[in-house]
Image: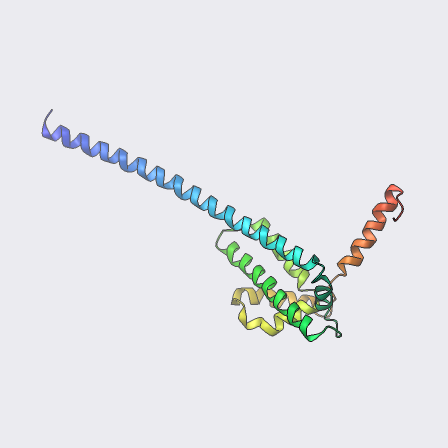
Length: 180
C-alpha cells in the first residue's frame, strides 16, 4: 500500500467519522429540544396548578372573588393581595405567549392559555390590574391583552362558584339524587 492509498483511506475514514458525528449531533440536538419543551410543559402545568390552588385556598378564595368582581367593599389590604396575585397571574400568561413564540409551547397549549387569559380578563378586577400595570408587560402581550380588555369591557366575569352549584344541582337531578 502506497502513501497515496493510505492518505485516501484516512480521508475516507475521516469523512465517515464526520458524518457519524453530524448524525449524533443532530440526534442530541433533537433530544435536547424535546427535553426542554417537556420541562417548559411541566413548569406550565405547575404554574396552572398553583394558580388554581391559590384561587381555591380558604385564606384567599374570598379575596379573589371580591377582587375579580372589583367589589367596592374590598379592603385595601385585600385589594393589595389581589393586585399582586393577578399581576403574577398575567405575567404567567405573558410567559406562555413568549414560550409559544420561541416554539417551547405548541399551538394547542397556547390556544388553551389564550382562552383562559381572555376568560380572566373578563373580570373587572383583572382588567383593573392590567390597566394599572400595563406598561410593565411586553409590547406583544399588550397588543393581545388590549384587544381582550376592549372586547370584555362592560362585562362581568362569570360567577364560577354559582355556575358550578347550578350545574352540580342539574347533575344530581339527572341521577335522582337529593342534596345532603
